Image (cartoon, rainbow, N blue to C red; front, side, top):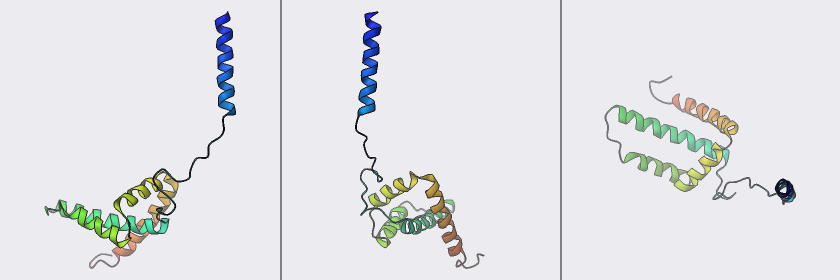
Length: 126
């Protein structure tokens, strides 16, 4: 009987501690990414479009038997230089944007539009 009384008091005490603790603000940006290192959605869309062009080219080369072992690094380095970003910054931003699937999906809708527009300028393709 004394045990159940003490148990009830302990549960009540723990509940009060949890309820009275100070609420913590959850940062909008994940650890390791600052507002200075955040790539704007518009730039990220352009970067993603370029990444997909590279990935398509690499896949095409692999499927036709062309050795493209060293090319991914070369191509990605070109993207990072073009947009003045580091691989780590790209990965951090990719992780950040993936955390909100609804917005990420909307970004990809724009990536698709960009890729479709680029396709118009490929000789022999409509």
